[in-house]
Amino acid sequence: MASHYEAPIRTPLITGDKTYHDISVDVAAPIEGKANKSWWIVFSIALVAFLWGLGCIIYTISTGIGVWGLNKTINWAWDITNFVWWVGIGHAGTLISAVLLLFRQKWRMGINRSAEAMTIFAVIQAGLFPIIHMGRPWLAYWVLPIPNQFGSLWVNFNSPLLWDVFAISTYLSVSLVFWWTGLLPDFAMIRDRAKTPFTKKIYGILSFGWSGRAKDWQRFEEVSLVLAGLATPLVLSVHTIVSFDFATSVVPGWHSTIYPPYFVAGAIFSGFAMVQTLLIIMRKVSNLENYITILHIENMNLVILLTGGIVTVAYLTEYFIGWYSGIPYENYTYLSFGAATGPYWWAFWALIICNLLVPLTLWVRKWRRNIMWTFIVSIIINIGMWFERFDIIVIDLSKDRLPSSWSMFSPTFVDIGIFMGTIGFFFVLFLLYARTFPVIAQAEVKSILKSSGDNYKRLRAEKGDDTPHYTEVSGTASVKKETEKTEKMSSEELSENDKKENINNLLSSLGTFNPDTQTADDLKKISGVGPVMEQKLHSLGIYTFEQVSKMTDKEYDLLDSIINEFPGRAKRDDWAGQASKLKNS
Image (cartoon, rainbow, N blue to C red; front, side, top):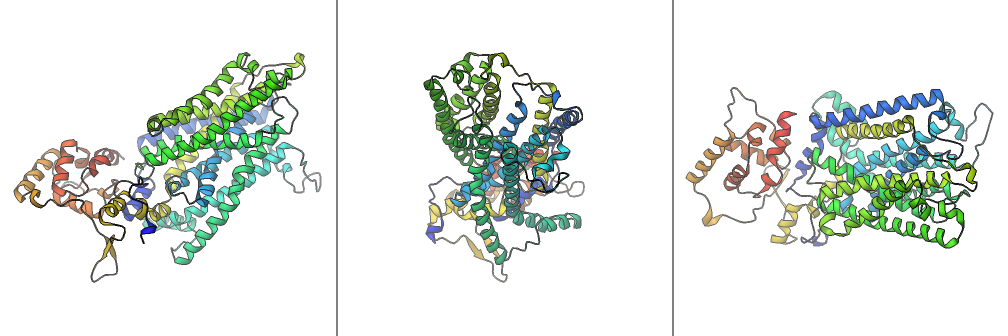
């Protein structure tokens, strides 16, 4: 029995003294509640950017590729830059969901669902660019090996465009199946909690009839492992194929055998940075700090450090080999002295600063555990990785072997508009996902609650691994988790008069509840308040979000002195802040 649990000294992955019911309530809260003002503001901005990009795409298709800033020398630019950038961002989801699953890493369970969703949405953005770049997207099905107007025409397998089609379609299909399979228990949970027949029907369809039987879970585990085994090679193969778009050519700076591992490491590097960006925002907006903890942030930063180190070695190798070769053309590639001092010097140094220098700060433990600094670094890395792809494509093409054909690239408003439109489309999809799909894999998080939850860890540290964590209630078949007190008040226990005085002082600050004129709120919507805690608050006369929102340090101390269970919990979980948002939603 003891081997099932982690050592109490290890940092818990779930904080806030959560129960199984608390996890269900917290995960379902964004779906069952109403969107707050912040969500609508961000969604509106993303929607405007998406519509701007959509207009630019329509203009491009109706007018022609000539509206882009391409020329005879630089015939690939922002479109392929953005394509490679989006594919790279989508890599982290597959790594977290597949590779870390095979390695049995428990910390993946709080972040895998949103990372997988990010993969789907990023690959959708990536797939748009090759289609638009065809110039005639209505003939896009010609790249598939199916009969068309020319008869049974087999496609040109020598074309890198075709390689991208197969890479993207395979990656998208496997990732989508993996993502949806993991969502089945979560959809069933939302279905069972639904209050309207329509909602119950919709989530019943989405859950594919999941019933929670032992057979369902057995098949779920088997399919997850099989899909993880299929998806793991994709982590290496997809961006390897994308790198072949360049490595199989004879363009100076592109014709390099280091590209496949270099591109894969760069993809994971940028993908984890985007996961950090999204989850740091989401954990705050959706009150998920107890499930996406500092430990999750630090572990992802360690992966960023590892892949960033590989990318740095690749940069140094590219620079050294170009210099050591003595070939004059190599002095104009994207990693050379000529690039550092030439007309694109600003893009070169943006790459070096963002991808090589700034991530080095994460070697300092204090900084890689700082959420605000991690958020800033993640944005800087994504900017740097975009410049890396821009440098590889534009700088290498701008100066070929004929000086007479050297040229510069300047993006048009259409180039910029389409790129901003894909960013807007990505966030529109992610924000809608966060309002309709469970953003935390609640079934998987519950599976590690007893081994990685802070309340269970504390209980085992005090009582030992074999202490019971629940007691059967006589007369019923249900079980109820024991609430273990870490210390008994004994002689320090408050007298009844002192308790009454503290309750009066508490209510004088928070206000009293009048059932004739006021309606009680569902206090269980506050993270950290379960059914038992809600009953205790009711016994004190606290029934509304308005009362809880008035709590300050003084009221938190009074509440701890009266209830004396998990002292400091209300302040740590910021009940007042949560209640303020709930009363305004």
